[in-house]
Length: 70
Image (cartoon, rainbow, N blue to C red; front, side, top):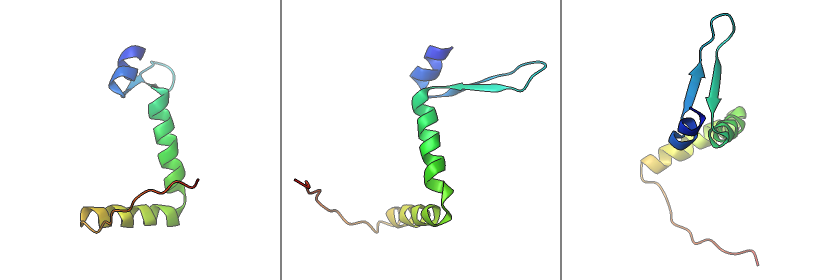
């Protein structure tokens, strides 16, 4: 089961009779969720991300070369 969760980048709910359920997921999935929570924790940052996604969907993007700081 654990290999399948990791291979599929998915999660599995472990249902228990007399105790709360639990979730098994890969560390990569967990870390991604924690990063998302962190980014959306600030209302200002969440609003900025929503605006950025909307601009991208409307094609309002500009290409920019990356420059090394060396």
